[in-house]
Every structure is written in C-alpha cells, then in structure tokens.
Image (tube, helix red, strand yellow):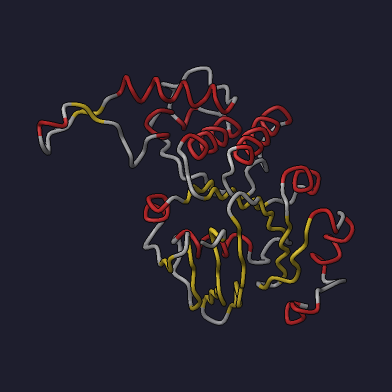
Length: 257
C-alpha cells in the first residue's frame, strides 16, 4: 500500500493568457510536513486552490489518498479529509465561534424527527471549548461574532477549526502572516501537534525561521512552476532564497528558471 497521501501530475491553471500554474508534479507522504515557498505571484496559492476545488484546473491530475479526485469545491475537499486554512479565512462573520467551527457539519439532536432536526448548541459549545483548550487558542468569549474579533483572533478560530477535526491532510496558507508573537507561537504549537499525531501538512509561508523549525521538506515555486524540491537538512535559508529569486534552479526543473 502506498504511503503517498497526495500527488499532482502536470497540474496547470491558465487564466486566459496568464499561466499562473504550469505542470506542477508534487507528492506528499503520510505524516510528512512540507513547506511551499516562493515570491508573491509564484503560484503557491493557485496550486492550493486547484487541489481543494476552489478553482477548476486547466489540466492535470490530482490523486488524493490513492484515488483521482476532482473536487467541485472546498466542501467536497473537506468531506474527503482535506482541512484548509485559506488566506481569506473563509469564516462567517455574522456567526459565533461554535457556529464557525461546526459550519457545514452541525451537531443535531432529536434526529428521530426525520427532516425536522434541532441544532445541539450545548454540545457544539462544549466541543468548541475543548477544541480551544486542546489547541491552546484563547478566545475570551466564544459567543462573540467573528466580525467583532481582532484579525489575530479570527485567524486562530480558523486554525482551531482545522485542527479540531481529524483530517487526512491539513493545508495552511500563510497562517501566521497577520499574527503577533504569542498567537504565532500558538499556531506553531498546533502544527507540531499535528506532526506528533502523524497528520500530513502543507504549509505556505514566507517565514524562513518558521519553515525550518516546522517542516521536513521545502518545495519552491517560481513563475508558476516548481523550481526546487529540497530536504530541510540538505539546505539553508540562503540556498532557498537563491531558488526563490532564480539565482539557482535544480536541473530537473530547468524550465522554471
């Protein structure tokens, strides 16, 4: 049985004449944590949007957990076992923390009533408090709506939602970009917990220190193409920057130069 949880073959996305992503061949093994790095516009977020069904790919193939997939949207990806924290967070501003954590998978009671089910708010609140305690996320009032929270608190809610439900793959797109030191530490502890639990993760980040602290491998994107695939112990920050800027390219990815 293969230990590869995610594979993309020739994954490509064109927006008219703009080639945002071209021929991305990528693999992620079970339990592995991989960082995706590159300049703004290098294709990192486009790559994630094709995997999770936010956008439909121009061509290529995505194999998840041994099966070819073509998700119609992020909810399909979530149901298959992919939890994602997007840069846009994808939170419902008018709802509180429990409603956001369980959005799309609400707990109900009196299911014997057939189609007339009642939301089990008490259970969702209790599970939310347990999830926040587990992940180390501190929210003073979970009944507060998302629109009344700081940017850091919103980000932590999105990450807590991702870490609450057991998934086959977690993807985080710049999860600490808008966070302070303490909140960043909380997120990094969540990532370490996922590693201890054997859950694979893709981390998109510009934070070199964070990447070298948290992942096993670094994949560099440049101009919509993968230009380097580096084991953490075989590289350093200066080397990664050289690939990001185009000063270096691995021979097998020469087209990305």
